[in-house]
Amino acid sequence: MIMLKQALKQTFADPCGWSVFIVSSIGLFLLLLLIPVWTTPGNDIYFQIELLGLWGTLLVAILSIGNGLLITMQTVIRHKQKESSAAKKVVKATTLSGILLGSLASTLACAACYSSILSLFGFGATAFVVEYRTYIAIGAVLLTAGAIHYSAKRLNNACAVCHI
Image (cartoon, rainbow, N blue to C red; front, side, top):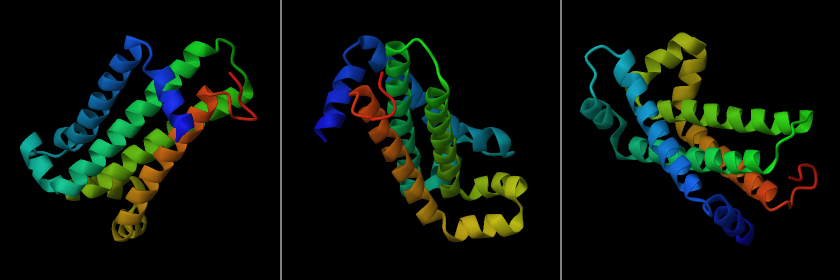
């Protein structure tokens, strides 16, 4: 917990950190909310929020805030180091995959979004995903929390592999 507090102090020491966090969190929330609105004929924002319900909207908000914090932390890490290596590219790819998986899992809260998942994965995989969507959503939140933890370790130079 102390490591996370120190990392947050570093992340938000600059006003630019706050603006990146706010813009990325709101942008991700709106993106996750508006993609089904744009892709489903006759859908609007109010109907989408009604479809998501309280828990779905809360899940999208938590994932948006978590991923916004992760993007902000990665921006600070990027500013702290200028050179790039293969190990650092792996860390960036892992962060990006966590953000994408979290975003995909947040669409599981919406019944209208099932059609896009169905077209992407097929019926069998979609039936599995719908059946276990609660566990998948919890996994997405845990994945985001893990990525934030490792980003905090990296910001504090507590990671044995990836010193800044």
